[in-house]
Image 1 (cartoon, helix red, strand yellow):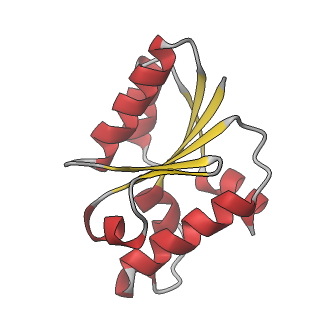
Image 2 (tube, one colour; image 1 turned 90 degrees about the horizontal axis):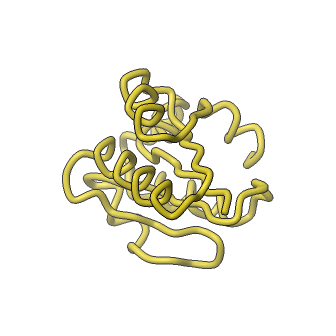
Length: 122
């Protein structure tokens, strides 16, 4: 399976559009845009952390699965990569966070930047 894991905080934070005033709303809008987009992946996992988790309940909704990070969003992203790779899935993470990209590569995944995703969801 082809799995796309989205670092919600990093993707939302890549656009200075006032998201910080309504983190939950920004998370909900990101989820909606992921649900509408044709991203050529079997599963899309949206990882949310902190106040953004109130914008979308955890669980699967169509092709989008929302995960609430119990602590660090980066740790939750890496855990998703490890778990999915253990099942033989091809995993791509959307983030611009350099340290997270290195951790993703070490866990067997690959990464693309937010602009890749945003150009497909706008």
